[in-house]
Image (cartoon, one colour):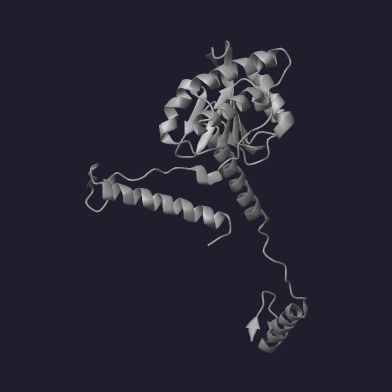
Length: 282
């Protein structure tokens, strides 16, 4: 037995009864199945993710003027805010292109870009205008490209025809840069004529001048309405061939015709096999 502070006595058995009653009361309470409150943790996770996304967006914008694809679709308001600093002619052309091909894939202070728009692999409108005097004085800022494998030996002829006809042999792209879509179509169609031998450089230049003069009088040449040739698609790309012997880590002998011919044959075979696969044939 134990003596309390009043001098009374409490038996051990009585203490045991009180303790037992307490335990029984706890046992009869309903089970608490509430999950731990991790709302604070979830909010912290969201805050971290939002901060990371903001930093990513700022990193994408770290190079002023470079058009960057955005995580969310570009709106007309986005474009108009960017265009406030653009010169009048390029600004107007961006708006015309949006009306015809929709919102650009990316836009910045230096350029607006559309990918796979209409018949074009890409369309670029530059805020910078480049002076060009053929066939009459104007400025170039509107570039449109199509898939086209240009033979290397034809590059100089295209350069003599029009300095604003551009070749990307590796990607398999042929582009024209002028101030209007109809002028780009004219340049691309005449470039095709030069490549195929339908027209000489001189004939193509003369045709270009006459077509532009007629357009100024309200008569649009058929070459200014649509492409007159079929594009080659991604197979127009030309990765070229190696001039280095990777086994020996040294340049190949340019006089070793067998080695060079084999490279050409391998590339031609890969091109042919790729076309067959794309066409669904084996």
